[in-house]
Amino acid sequence: MKSLRLFLATLQFLTRIPVPQRWCDNVTLDDYPRGIIFFPLAGVVIGGLCALLYSLLLSHLGPLLTAVAVVLTHIMLTGALHLDGLADSCDGLFSVRSRERMLEIMRDSRIGTNGALALIVAIVLRCALVYQLSLTTLPAVAILIMVPVVGRGLMSVCMHRQCYARESGMGNIFIGKITEGRFYATLAITAGILLLLDGSAAMPALLITLLFAFGFRRWVAKRIGGQTGDTLGAGCELFELIFFVVLLWK
Image 1 (cartoon, rainbow, N blue to C red):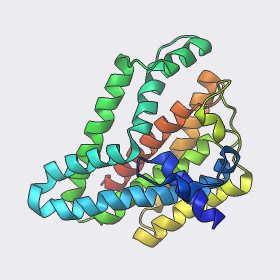
Image 2: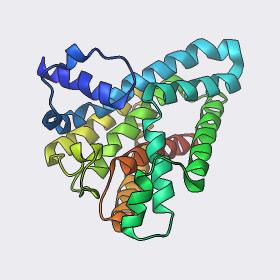
Image 3: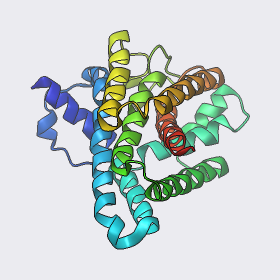
């Protein structure tokens, strides 16, 4: 029962799905790091809803409008949480300033040129990928579920054995607080879901994305001395896009 409550609390944290607060009773902030193993399962919920919409709309609206609808639904389900992190991270990390100034820029609620460009590219690319997917013989429903699973599962890479780059913030709930066992369990659950959905076909794409995730973690840590909630969100968006692109690569 406590595990179910922790899963629902994790789903509440990662999405805008209206999970009643009473279903998450007795889950404290100290419990959240244990919920990292549920990140891929939250991805299943997000991807499943997007895949359902895709299946319902494709024959009625055509591939282009369906792609736009699916991407907008994904954004609404997540409350643009990770897109916000991507924009803030790009504004700060590409500002060519000192570490302290980068962190100040990332905390600023205003969006800069780098952040705006990152949002445009990410949204347009995601729409293009869903559209392209509809023109292939690949298992579209499975892929639409797998993409958010990978994005959220590999966020653990940016949490495990990392320092929190700020003194306080929501990212501090997870960063540096993921145990070795839960880190590897999260990766195993992510891979297991992909195996169930698409056999071993998606494994090369997962491996490439995992290598990118470690590279991203290293690059960010060198820039600002660790990770923040914004870089976790940016990582999620980037891991999803990289995985999606590799899957469609011919």
